[in-house]
Image 1: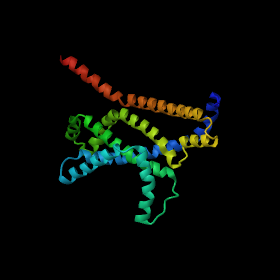
Image 2: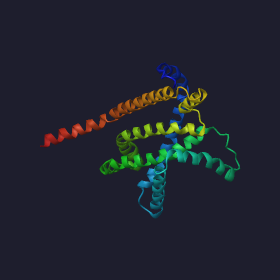
Image 3: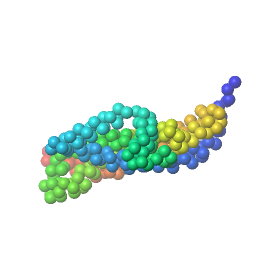
Image 4: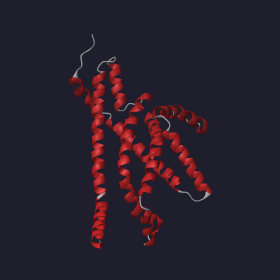
Length: 249
């Protein structure tokens, strides 16, 4: 006869899982930081069409994005985990076998997240009316100020929903870190199950689900508030345009 389900154990094990929440958030933060930088570089190359060299760089960026989006997360994680130490020894003579395993996870997720961010940024940039850039240049702002003051705020609003989805997907992919022995929330849950010889597995996975559900809700609510805040100026501008059209008519 199997062991009966124990709902009380879900409450009991939650503090032990939450103790490793900072590790999970650290992996996410590191991936978002480096992935956004790499994604911006890839997107900028994809948007540059003039010149043979720029077109070639755009083709390489497109090939990278396609390759990363076609590679399963767990496959790339093991490739990085086994290949990075070999490359480090071969090129630099440095042994990184004992390196903190979170580094391998961040490298893997950065490569994947950057591909998604590149396409997200490119689509958000394209969604901005080209007339906005022309107006900024006509006012004498220059390319850099036009991008920072005119295009970037509008593109950021357009990108927020997809960025939120990418962040949620990243959080779920980060749970694969335990497969290379890293102890985050998922790894801690797996350790507890193994120490109990497979007992309380259902309760622990339910507790993990509750934590991830709570994080998902917080992220979605936070991005919802941010999107509404950033959209206020856009809504005001659209209202003014509508009022002006009504007056003319």
